Image 1 (cartoon, each protein chain N blue to C red):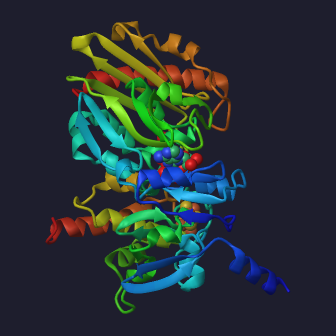
Image 2: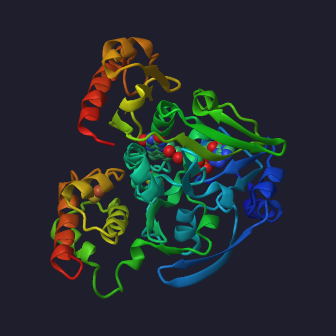
Length: 174
Length: 267
Ligand SMILES: Cc1cc2nc3c(=O)[nH]c(=O)nc-3n(C[C@H](O)[C@H](O)[C@H](O)COP(=O)(O)OP(=O)(O)OC[C@H]3O[C@@H](n4cnc5c(N)ncnc54)[C@H](O)[C@@H]3O)c2cc1C
Ligand code: FES
Ligand code: FES
């Protein structure tokens, strides 16, 4: 009963939008409702549940993903706007065997407890470290200001990111 | 929470976009305000007209003594734009501290002004800079000052079929500017802009976020700016960020800080 109702809504609603999105290196083509937001597309259509959703106000940052390398709030980002773009989610950080240096550093520095905020912090941090300049502590704190963690008190998160930044500074990028 | 249904229109020219706009078919840019308003049930348009593919709304250029910024330009790009860093660094510094990094990657300057959110940093500094905007409708094109545009909280004085195409900021050689704000949550409690063109004897002060709309005044010298007098001129809105009395107090403090900061900057 409910199903047939939602089906008739779906077919009589506004025309769907064709999108082709590169998700963690895999090209995905779908017809989406205009109102589809990226976090629902990733979690519900593609089953990529690593990206979380909470405030839906662009305030907490748990839904952070990268669109063409830039962090956005996937809770308030239309899937249609990701058409033709490359989207990176937390699932794209590791190849399934080895952890990304940020993930490893988060583990080493106890930068997570419940872990709900972690995908968002990882993606925000990745965007920062992928930039032209290796950030100092102040830049890290400033960049992560828009993400909320209820457990860690932030200190270990900043240390974890700082540690990776220091390695980059000493390495080929530094 | 699922958004209410709407159609999405994605014009590639300004004319095409103008033909699409009606009371129920509204401009859409970064969506940072509009999608929230729709999710909250405050707004239920039939269609969103996406402005991001219209060339006239993009780019930053300088000419005829003006800095012209396309309405769809996003905060993050304006914060690092070479021309803005060179010609109007105070504007780039303000853009760098809007909301959070994700809002800066999505939100546009035009959307910020058209939404007329009372706690806007952009409107406060632009008002102090005596900036104006270009509005285009099927009937023609007009220029209005930011002061004329932002007439009330969440109320920009523009017709539903008008598109904000660009923001125009007069450039002044040797301008010094400081923008300081007090912010404990996502948006400022108070923002203060102070600008000085010593050669022209032109001094401006803008105060925003405390009240329903930003306010800006001209002075003959910096010495004329009395922080306590300014605190008595604003009309604070009491809210979660503080009472009226408290907001007057922080206004005076931040006017003082803005003046002190201006002493340290050369541009
Ligand atoms: C969490 C959070 C924190 C924020 N913090 C700050 C802050 O510290 N300081 C600050 O100044 N701002 C802040 N903002 C506001 C932010 O700057 C604006 O949300 C953003 O710039 C709006 O632009 P947009 O492109 O997303 O607009 P949209 O949401 O797409 O549109 C907003 C409104 O303007 C209309 N519109 C958009 N573009 C045009 C146009 N070119 N012509 C005509 N109408 C148009 C739309 O129809 C809609 O009514 C914050 C926002 C959020 C969500
Ligand atoms: S769920 Fe997107 S920012 Fe909180
Ligand atoms: S680890 Fe629990 S919210 Fe950050």
